[in-house]
Amino acid sequence: MGSAFMYIKLIRVTTTSDRKAGFLECQKYWNTVMSSCPGFVDSIVATDVSDECEVVIIAIWRNKESLDRFMAGDHDVVEQQSGISEFYDDLKIDYLSVEQEFFPSFAGHILFGE
Image 1 (cartoon, helix red, strand yellow):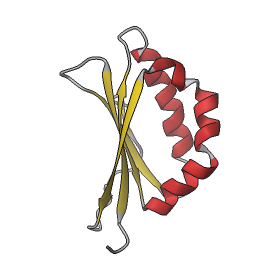
Image 2 (cartoon, helix red, strand yellow):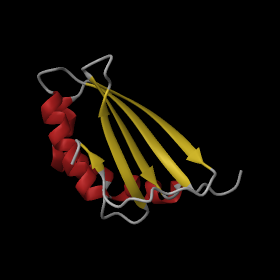
Image 3 (cartoon, helix red, strand yellow):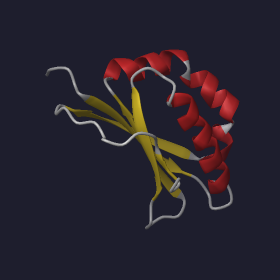
Image 4 (cartoon, helix red, strand yellow):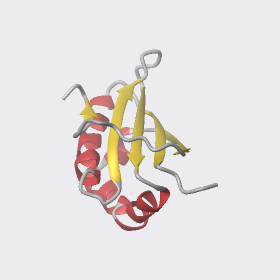
């Protein structure tokens, strides 16, 4: 398989209704930090309409190497600084590799309707 044009980390988060707002606030911090990381493209954070306690995060990177650099370098520090682990019960993570050259034509982040 050739080099991917996008690499996506899909995260499904299980939280509780009383901790969900705290989780989303922490996620804003994550998105701010990631936006300055080389190779980061964008992230989308959404609540599952069929389950108010599930949040879905789609973190888009230019390639696997960019994500790997973030995971090896900044990930654990950001996790600790954000305090996000207090606001969820479970994470399920999948990775998607996009082989077509496609990048969003917009700048910035789609986050909480901002």
